[in-house]
Image: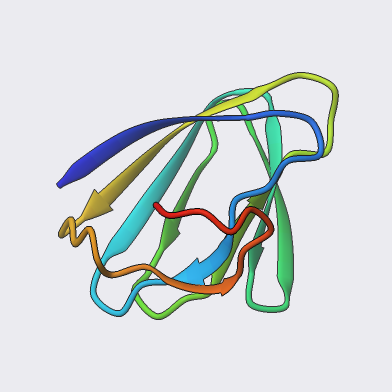
Length: 93
């Protein structure tokens, strides 16, 4: 199990990826994001939860003025189980 506290600022996004084994739960603490899963786009706001199952392609976009604060809970935690499809930053996890 891993819990990460993420801050996503205006016009930022996470990389588009999937996990072969790991599942994620996203809990929005503050602000709003758009969650991209496959071809679907879903707006999530404060108090919303989304479950990302292993194999599901996903990405978080910040499109409004305020910062989005969220918890990402990964289980089982597999640090090397991130397969990047699109990476705007060229960095590592």
